Image (cartoon, rainbow, N blue to C red; front, side, top):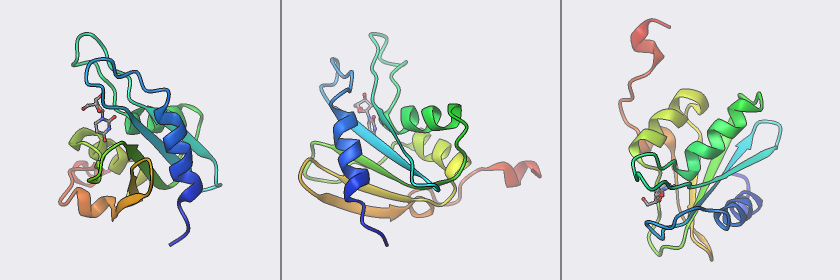
Length: 132
Ligand code: THU
């Protein structure tokens, strides 16, 4: 298991750009591509609340839109003592495009948890059910 310090630092830096005036809960994410490139994201909230986009999804959609398709792990940073895990929809979307990547959770000081996505999303619905 490689060091995640650089990836976590990128997620912490991205968190600074969070647009979270409604919840006040800033999140940063950093997705590591197979070639070592890091693509970051932060949560972006909206007055409708429902249109809020999580940091993980921003990072993933940025990466996909840049033509990236091979991912190794993702770091998620929030200012919490307990680990902040990706929400259900983010887990589903990460599973679709990243497969069983490592999910590293951290706060502003240190890593708080690390799990494989398959552990966080047991019995996922995916393309295999569609015969694809
Ligand atoms: N949020 C994320 O961006 N990622 C997570 O893993 C958990 C939740 C955001 C969504 C919303 O802007 C705020 O945190 C509070 O739920």
